[in-house]
Amino acid sequence: MNNNICIPVLGVHRSGTSLITSILKELGVKLGRHLQPASHDNPKGFFENRLFQMKNMQLLTSNDFNIDALDNMLGILAAYQHFKDNNSTYSVEVMPEFTKSNVWAFKDPRTVITFHFWKKVIAQDIRPLIMLRRPEEIIQSLLNRSDFSNPEGAVECVHGLLKCLLDIKQDNDCLTIVHNKLMSNPSESIRRINDFYNLNGNIDKALENIDESLVHCHQPIHIPIDLQKTYNEVATA
Image 1 (cartoon, rainbow, N blue to C red):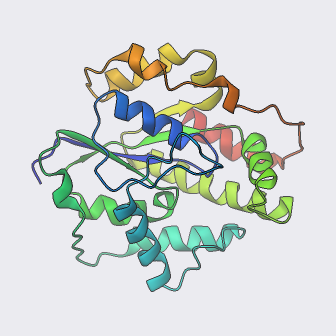
Image 2 (tube, one colour):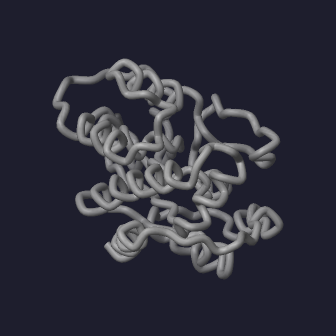
Image 3 (cartoon, rainbow, N blue to C red):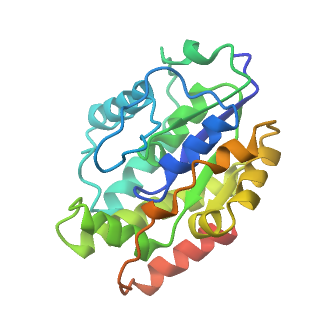
């Protein structure tokens, strides 16, 4: 491919990846045509290209990984390691959509697990954008949406995906945006994105995507020490 930069947007579910991808779009990054429509639980849109979304689901199910069983950290890590170790030759038909884009991005939370598949497929400069949010906030959001029936499953999900992100950060040129910093000082975070990817986007226009009313205050919950440690490692790696 002749593209310059591909930006996989990576993050745990409910960490603000839709928001940060919408900001990329306003900064001039191409997302493709086949975007998942908005819904009641994400009224501003998911900004997920359905072609990547469907390919990720196909990858997981064809390798006997249950795409809905995210409440098991060991299962998440096993799936991640499978795609990291697999040296098969791949071909994907979704790429021609972006052949004329100098900078393009795609977002689907499953890409945290399948990242190394896409790294092998996309023969160009891959520079992930990692959206990081406090684990206690993610867990509370997952439980409020009834994505998990118990806190233990949510903890397993968040911890497993954070471990994957930590491994990705150690071997790739990534930009990490922290959710609370984005909300408290959006101009600074958006300038960092603009500079890191050599964009020439309209920062003022991108700022219009920040909607503080969508950030809900939750009751503080206890999280395991080892989960907090992993989060801190991802934040500082």
